Image 1 (cartoon, rainbow, N blue to C red):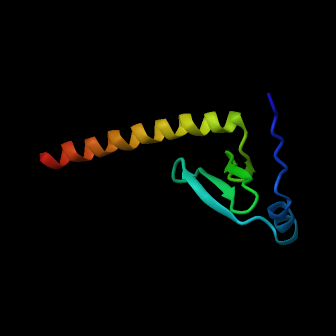
Image 2: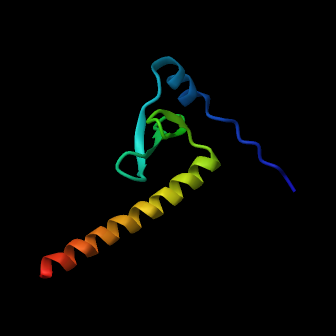
Length: 88
């Protein structure tokens, strides 16, 4: 069985080294927590509890997934609460 070794594309990394990263929001976890990815080198970042950008590790992926689930259920519960209170 042949192993294919893919060379990393150096041009995007060189671009980021020269001009800096161009981050775009890839996922909105909550209103304040977002996940970012560089358009050129695909480096992924997220915001930590202090609001600083840090590298997106598997641990932070799991934290963001749980936080997103909690946020979605809270928003759903508030939506139902306002709907029920508007009937009266």
